Length: 250
Image (cartoon, rainbow, N blue to C red):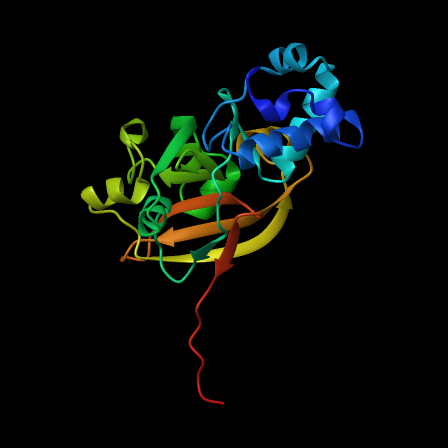
């Protein structure tokens, strides 16, 4: 990093507060491809030592670049030069999967698992799934990623009788259910906005206080039985939700 010309003598080359000067130096390095898409930045303490500025200055410059979408933080991995990501239309007209939607766009879907197992149900799950307190539920909580970029947080609950082996779900839940003959055929979506918690902003690599598009889904089998209830928080800076509706005669 010390050999990147755009960072050498940055304090004299740019105007403004110190963190702005450092921000401009990073942007110049990225535009000139001295820092390429996907490159990892060194630790903030190393940048501080190399550039001769405080860690507070480094953190403020990086925070600004993350907010601008130039850099992306990946929880537990570090800070990287972001790929240019276009806004995505998320169709709500059929019960598709995140994996299918990303494949349609030529992106590779993956998951960062937060929770995966079978538990006793809470009151919300009993009501939504139509089960009693004696029945157990499978819970799948994860960060959904596309080409390594966090896109959404997904919290799914299913009756244990439909998904007895949640640990065996590798990526696509619906592909796993299809093999079991239990893939949902229709779903009802409730859409709203929701502020993310500090933990959720870290998982999605978005600024503190950011809002998300909340989609609450109830999915049904062909028999009419509820197969799945899911709460998904989509990054509002990357997603538009699209619904198609037939228009009847006036």
